[in-house]
Length: 285
Image 1 (cartoon, rainbow, N blue to C red):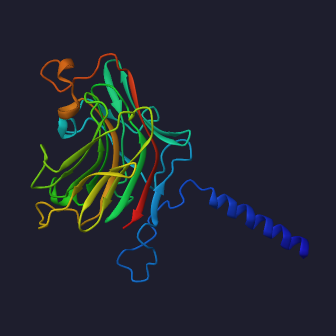
Image 2: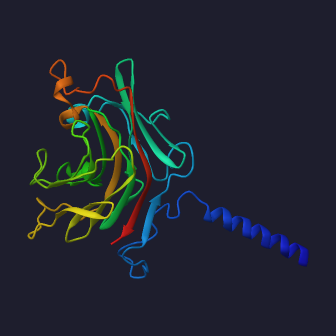
């Protein structure tokens, strides 16, 4: 009986260690902000993906946009989004998104948590290394989960990080609302000269009062309209996360390389570009 008990204890220990080594310490949202019994405090981790398991991204957290999209996803981008391993995978502890030119055509990936993980009033931190090269347009951003019901920009959009390769080293954050979209006025920027060589933490701190954008903990833009309306503050619903590399497009295209009147201005020497993401972490506010 004593020997049997020792065996059981060993098995419990092994299972416990296996659980602690799991890919995601908070692989799904484990709180309900309307639940009076919720014990999580502001600053507590409520969800993360650490990208530690090689292969395809966790399908409990991520799905994909596929194809060219109408009008190049509304921005005249030239890439074709896939869910293929060549374009998106977990490798060496990182989420890898590769945009690749094959036979003159670009493929890439746009990974999203739509319908799987969404959140409201949270701090979002994404540690990433960005691609370089004129014509690249990587982004880490969020979209209102109700966009299919009320449309964009009524649903709101929170751009945590955008970088256009024709303007290297300048990282942008922006907010799209019914009162400011397209050529939005609600935006900020910060210089990150080593965006391609080093990982940086791109962050949005979202509360009912404001949205603050940071890089490596340094604040560089705050949006907080004093009189909040549906036109300037559609940020009171759940949002989901998107990460992608677009090529060309209305903003990403470099005019010196454009042909045929299209927004296809990409450095012709580029064959492959990469964004690596170390983790995504979401904290309660």
